[in-house]
Length: 219
Image 1 (cartoon, one colour):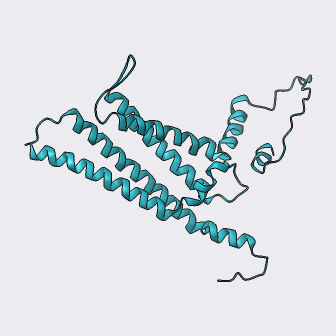
Image 2 (cartoon, rainbow, N blue to C red):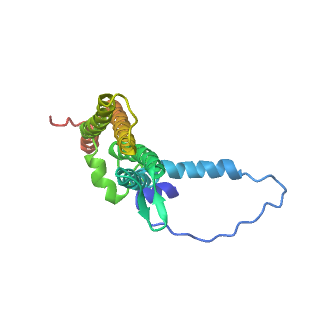
Image 3 (cartoon, one colour):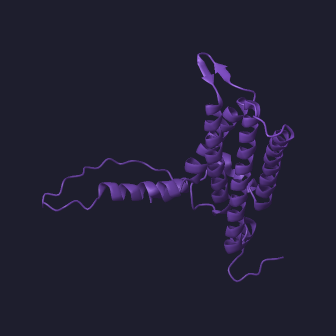
């Protein structure tokens, strides 16, 4: 009830009560870990933007900044020297962030209003995210990543398979990152399309909800 009240924006107040231990010597009905996990699981299910989209965006932005900033070589920030290891960290954060954001947008695009808690600032992104747009993004990322790695491969073959400089190693990592991001987004598009196949597009669903019982919607 508390979760559904939060989803629908109902005013929630806390009323203090006294809880007394059962004096009959019975075992407590609550199981700390099992019931606590069920409660946490329910909260995670009903807050996809809080658990997927927003944390994913943060990881994606931080990861891309780390990965792109390392393309030209190590970066010095005060006494800290950021080298290729931070680029690997950025690649990891970018991949995890892309997966979380894409899945969060799929949930936001397919879940009817009033079922889960959505953030208002993500409403436009939920409406914008569709199968066709996701496929376009995936295609662009894949093309850029494939071109980058193809350039490195061509350079390596042209120079008789010699030793590549750190710059080309970083370019290879960036190309692989873009390809992996494209694949994740493409998979989320397939998941979105599969959901539409089972329940219809959000536009069709809203039209069906607005149609009175027994009435035939206009084409």
